[in-house]
View (cartoon, rainbow, N blue to C red):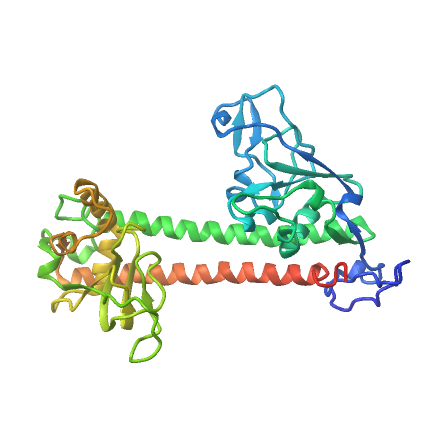
Length: 417
């Protein structure tokens, strides 16, 4: 691949043809890309029907519901997950079709496009189908290109409460196409190979997270039990874990009532909020602590383990000042495994959608000796480090792909310039 682009050849209207910053060697001397409205190379259709109730596991026909374009599919669809028994008044795909959702409660999702490489898949209503001549336009190239032009596509969205994207708008979208279809194919294959790397890295990360979850289920006793199913060899004959309440092991407090953002007066740049458990606010603290959500948004699900300085919101509980011989990291791991489920049951029982102080202070914690719970915490912390490293690799691959697309396609600012 080369970044040495050929000087653009003027078009009949006097404007230069566009050239991407990065081209494969075999196309380095090819003509520039020429701009044309999408309607000049595509025909537009719309899917039909297919309510969610028509999706069944053992259906005869493959199908795609428009909602799946937001959640299930990326730029290329090579296999379809859903099935239906609908046979009449359906719209069937042709390989190379590009699919886009046409309505959503937020506009940002309407810039999603996916190339379907399968014939005769039933396409539901609210799916815009962009059909091109396969010999002229590569569907994978087109789907990736449309996603690259996200900001331009979002300018075509209309609506206030429910947002819509119409064929009449998309057909006016100006794109720049290589004069040689083989260049489209090469770009599609290149980005496809990066997608495969991203997918492989995501599977590796998911496997590590699943391994950690399964390990924690064995390293901590189940509710009502006092010994885990799996122990390190040096602790296998050390007896049962001791049951103690949180209030016997640490102090519990909440943040202050003042919820205005502060950057001066001793307030620290790390903040824990009830909904997302991260912002900046009030009630400065320094030390080792476990923090958990206190209101109905994510009750019992949001945790942070913190060493050092931080601020936290009034609806966040801070478990701190642990007794000698108690590891805050162990507490965090224990809560991650047990706390959420127990709090949800207690909340339902008491008809509340928030965590009350007593729910935390009176919660029983099954504790091993300090050497054992330190060993356990170190083991899981090392696994967390591995997960963090693999997450960084995944993020780096996604960043690489984004940068690659910015060079393989002419910049959106150049199109229609």
